[in-house]
Length: 325
Image (cartoon, rainbow, N blue to C red; front, side):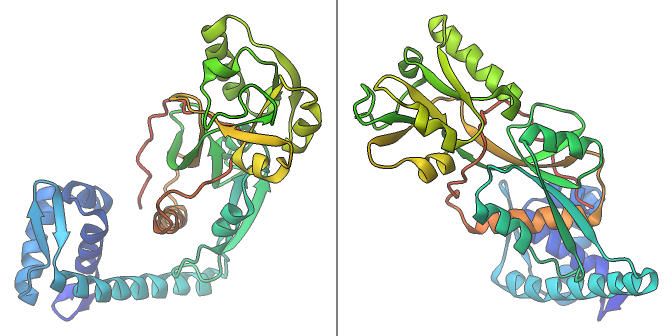
């Protein structure tokens, strides 16, 4: 397949190099060696008599002429792929479908973003959302019952590939006469002496145990007065000026009202992380394209959105590269 003096593969190379901004990463994405990519790029630039990229120690930067070329190259690549996919769809009459796991604690705007991703190559794509606690959703991914999932601080797992979407602190909620109420933020050792309204272990057993372990290391004892599963259950249990509640930002925003105050917990290890996960051996082009488009939407909203997520901490996950087909 050619377009002028260039093949579709040449346009794919230009697009990959522009999007990755790095020779090594672009070569890995294309499944070729870096020297082969460099050699082919030189041939392309000679053919069109235009310098498309500037090379440096930090990677490659698309030139002004290159950006104009890339815009058309993307259209050509997308049109070719769409034609191929539509031909296959017509032949097999099989609609594309993704099953995505989410937590009931995820904010509506994040779920709306998942549902609004548009893939030009998959015009008849349908999405099915499955709601459960984060670790239950993760188990469904491992059983291949889900294609993707948003999971709060997934434990390290060689079978899972993940990419971090955002991070937020916990909110500590107290009555306005609580000794900590005038603080702009609090640390773990400052809240350990007070009775807690804490989340149930079934919400996220790994996070539950990790937080208690760190808290006990700070003081030797933690006083959990009540255990809850929903933010709405916590506020009625704050009946005195000593008890405090652990809530997510979304939960605190939803339930905190006059007479109460929510304070961010500042801790290098305890935080709310959210990851988009799938199986490490998932080579589906549809999954890769969906992830790429979703993360592009996330990047367009930087600085980071204040995502309100189920309870999570920063377990030191080694984020594996996302499989790119």
